[in-house]
Image (cartoon, rainbow, N blue to C red; front, side, top):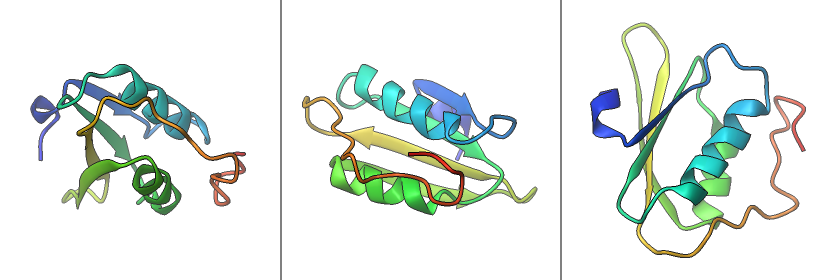
Length: 95
């Protein structure tokens, strides 16, 4: 997987939580159907996967040789993202 596969790349490796989550959800809401968003992180974002699932977003993830994760995401439909109020990142203190 490479950043060239994405229309938007978010490098969350140096961001404080919950900023990578917030930026990812905003980017997914802004892109057109069929466009792809890539998130790069130092750890696998398990809480994000649930939010993606609830919002009908497809994704694939890979761990690079350096241990970082790249998550490539896209949504097929044109509906805006709806993050449920109970979706949060318990590992990062986000709400």
